Image (cartoon, rainbow over all chains, first blue to last red; front, side, top):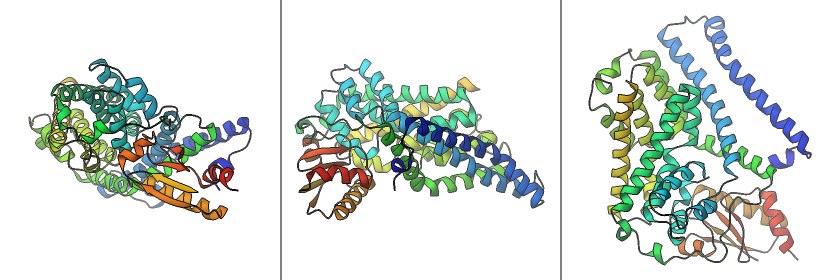
Length: 349
Length: 80
């Protein structure tokens, strides 16, 4: 039985059901802190401010909190994004020049529902519609870099200023990197079959004509799919965060990657690029490291380098991009992230 | 009936193939499932979002994995 079949038939009752689920979410989120305080401090008699207690508390409290945040954010984002599609984005970008096109492509990259497994058909489809290579790359950079889950998590953990900085920085990197790569005249580094492939017949819009029930169903399924895929990363990330939270002395990191160290951002990006995780998995670590005095610019650069450049996506893109362009792609994006990291450390210092 | 699953072999493509197979078995249809993972051919159907489901050369779903009952509805009008 699917969610759609379980949903009440009338629109009125559907909204009531959604409201009930939302209320249950709010209560669970609110009870979370209270529950672990009572359980660890009162029921088990563990002393607050003890290192072990703090570690255990951080782990359980954050697992539930981040789990709840993920469920809420993924569901809302998936339902909202089902009103956009890669086909509509392609139509909007067709015939746009570089410059304006790069800006639009980066913005659309954030709101278009897009799975990296569609990167190759999307790339070919954009090129076939006459979208310049640099503009197409802006889209492909922005899509994972300005991650909607990361936006939601940053907002709930650090507030709107950090979130706004993250979005602005991600868009800037995508716009500039795409524009620079376009200027380099990279057509010759695109596999020739891309230019020969034509989209046949009528282009199918993947999300047009869905009913509201189907969009809700998609939201629920996306939550299940993502959680099933990322839970090991999430637990490892929260575990590391908990250990850092409990055992690493305050100010420890500032010595190595902190404000006083000019190489801080470089080190963070060098660690982040080969690391393959997702925004949700590293957020607990980012939170714990921030508590211990790591500057926000360094942390954002770390997070962005983890989500923007991943090996599986590079392997997919290798089908359409020659090694030279792939290397330039990684180089330009990584450089952009490093610059952004230093800039933020300057601004936020 | 010829059913094609278009997609480069990602996890969603495998899910779509599984759901489609279940739907065919549930309806007791006589149909063959072909997997298409070659990009130019996929694009030839006008598909930019994978996975996609093609029934007798008509694209019926693109960019998502439908539920089994949705696939049954898509298949049912085709059955004699």
